[in-house]
Length: 213
Image (cartoon, rainbow, N blue to C red; front, side, top):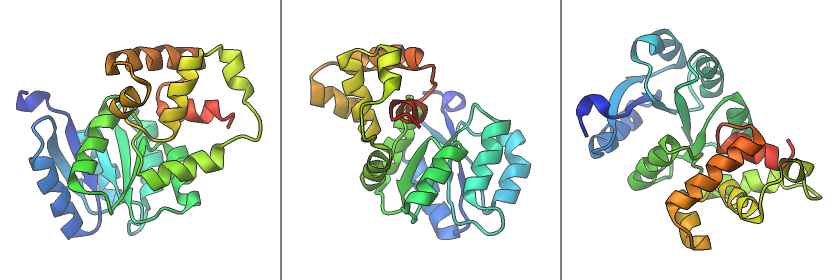
């Protein structure tokens, strides 16, 4: 892939050692490239227009303006950018605050380098990657006490409902394909039709609508 065509990845992280580690991880990827990093939200907000990465890896616990507020402001101003929260925090409130602010994925800092790259690729392919423990928390918190009316109204097929449930659990397209025995291309077609029926743009919005929130 030509260097100019590679998706550009930004980093907002106050720990210099973590920033350096993430840069080195990105350097190993042939299908994406490091764009720029910032040590605080204020600098990121000021410099985003000039760089405008396709994806940013965002810490939550930043000095001054925190990562959740940074995502909220950037998501409103630059809707084409996507945000992968990268943090030590896995408490429910921070998770849901980040998702409500506009985060597209949520990864714990315990994730290994390959998991980080996989999460970035999944996000750029329309997914909403989450660490397994985070996905379970989201599903547990959003699980309704009775079947949602949204799905019936949207007239999703049984297969679409099955795929949506697996998306809510944080599975990647490849994992869903292996689980239900159809190709990744077919998975993407189902998801495209499902998003159209639900009038949503991404996995997070679909899950929220699925669970009636």
